[in-house]
Each structure stands twice: as C-alpha cells, then as structure tokens.
Image (cartoon, rainbow, N blue to C red):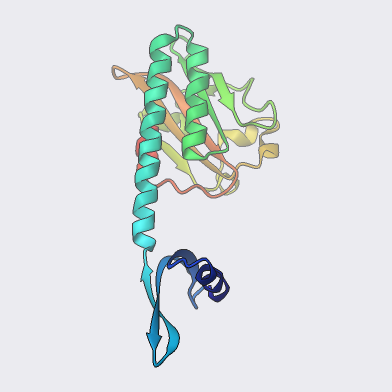
Length: 212
C-alpha cells in the first residue's frame, strides 16, 4: 500500500481502492482518502481508511442480479422466436453456465410411455458420458426425488452412491458437486435439468432461485 500511495502522490491522486489483508488472513476491500497538509512548514499527509467490503459485496450482488435478469430476458426472446426445442435448450444451457459459472449441465426429457429420461442437450463435458444413459423414474436417490418433484443437491459425488457411478467414463469428468432440478409444465413432469461442477458448489439461495 505504501508504494502505491507514494506513486499516487506523484500523480497528485488522493483517492484509492485497495485489497487489504488482515492479520487473520482475511481479505477486505478498503478505500483510502489522502490529503496533503502543511504543518510547521513541513508537508504531512492525513489518511482516512474506510472498510467498504460489505458495500462492494452489495454492489457486486446487484450487478450480478442485473446481469442474470438480462440473461433471462435474452433466453425468453430466444424461446419466443425459435421453433426448434433442441436449439432453445442449447441456448438455455449456455446462459446457465455463463451466469452461474458452472462447469457442465444437461437436460434430460421425460418419456412418459417408458417412464425414463433421455438426454436432449448437454454442455461442458470432456467425454461422451451421459449420451447413451437413461434414468428410470424412481430409480435411486435422484429418480425418487424427481418422482416427488424435489430437487437434489449432492455436494460431493465421490462420497455418495449414485447412478453416475454406473455410467462409463463419468469418473473421467472429475465432477465433485451435482444439482438436479425437475422440470415441470402445468404440474406435469417434462424433464430434468442437471448441473455438474468440478469443485465445491455453493448452492446459495439466490443461485438456487435462479435455477428454478
């Protein structure tokens, strides 16, 4: 900080924003006001430091909210102008990955006659996994949750027994977290939206609300 402030004095700059590390190791956002004074014929500097971490976090949250609303508007426009379901779902997954910063996602459509889900679209995968895998309604933890129209959050796939362990090449994806959401229309089940992440996933309320 001292070096930055010395450089700023040369440029006659009196306002700065910094990332400041506390003794605990925590990083805080601070703003600094610097004023040059003349005291006993010597130049001295008065420095005022404000911790603006909470304000910065609130501003970032608002910007993220605006960005997500804009993405939803674009998705809505696409859906309204497209007659191809696959193209619509592909665009939807693209927006979800960009806005929620997730590694991979997939949409499975429900086939009522066979009570199974088949892959319709997917993005972010390294292998061909899931392409030829069908989920049976009521099968395993995920299938039972979908049957009851409940979402499923698995923070660590490596510690959970799921249907994915039976799918070839899935392990190569190195996914850690999973979130599955049943898709319904007029109360009827139409599919499943699946979200995969290769590191810990913070499924905060706002994040989950955006998915729903």
